[in-house]
Image 1 (tube, rainbow, N blue to C red):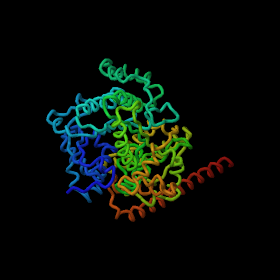
Image 2 (image 1 turned 180 degrees about the vertical axis):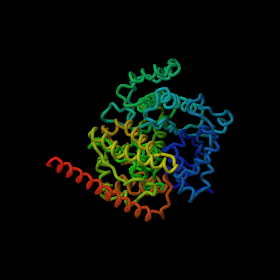
Image 3 (image 1 turned 90 degrees about the vertical axis):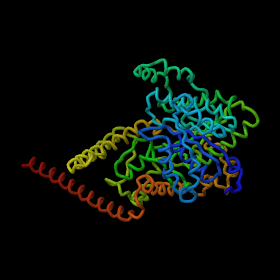
Image 4 (image 1 turned 45 degrees about the vertical axis):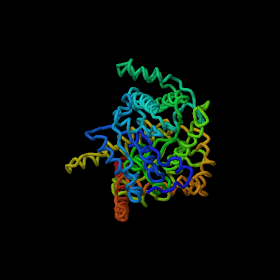
Length: 504
């Protein structure tokens, strides 16, 4: 059942064999989904590390059940059979791939290296091993592929955080990646390595941005040997409309924080008033990365370029809002109540402040105290206490995200945005969101869709229960108001009695 390819992009990916590392992550999964749904590829090999008693094959079964495939599974379920699990691990020599598997993969012509540890506070040894060592192993593997057309390295918009303006070009790294990889072997003592870390990563807020920077310099060293390109997306969040409006990929990072606000657990966020949230919607990020793959391939057909092709994705040029503006707008429009979660504990909503003392006070009064009380109640009823750990996790996540909560980075936005929009118009790769007449309306609509998706896809709540959840939330709010009035009455009574006692 071969459909004739309809456009340039479809033609480029037609019948290709593709290898993806990090295929179980947010970007990897979305990439696999888009390739299967919109391009007629032959096969997608996904590197999967056997873990937690699960073999790579069992992990593939899980991967195929991921919510990102909900449209594909309904429309073209047979496409999912094109995914092949490759047992391996980016931190092993040769990616830990079996020789017989390497033979099977000789037809691979496109490699997407998405594997990385995205934990900001990962110890340097781990971050180097995965983000730099893993990239080196992926490049070495790509060198053995006779039909390679492009190697796409997924980096991050924040790989050069000491700059105030980031351009789509390669910046030389402050350290030599070879030296850093040698450190893993030479410095056996973790304490010593962590002490060194603080000296090495001056100018970098964390080991994540530091090792992603090193990985770029490593890719740059391979630009004469392989057709390599670097793609730097900003914070990858929900999709605008592809595979479905507002689709939310995972409870990791920023999406998890939105879910916690909706559940009434996260009540306060510490961030600068003028901070833009630089987002790359998942679908726009994937579509543009696929376009850049073809662009990079065209560049290398002329021979190795003088400079490494680097492509950026950032919303700073077309989404003018600050994060606080978007959040306050969501409160004003009562989005949290429109999309009330079944799993909400307290009243949803959040207070944003750039004063540290106010933040600490609110964390204590609005998060820690209620969590302690509710956990105590859960214990009394013989249930497992869960709230305090959720509050602690949210707090830690926000602490490590701090450099991004108080800094804006400037850039020319999405690389070649105009030509990308023109080329992909009317195709499965359209980037219509860029030309939306009412960007403010689109942002708010996307936020509403995102909350629906968090409810349906991440918390797995039936849309039919929405009416009931709204009613329960109204009752909770009513009881909460009563409680506040009662406490206020008690306080006034106590003050009045103290005053009278003082008089007589």
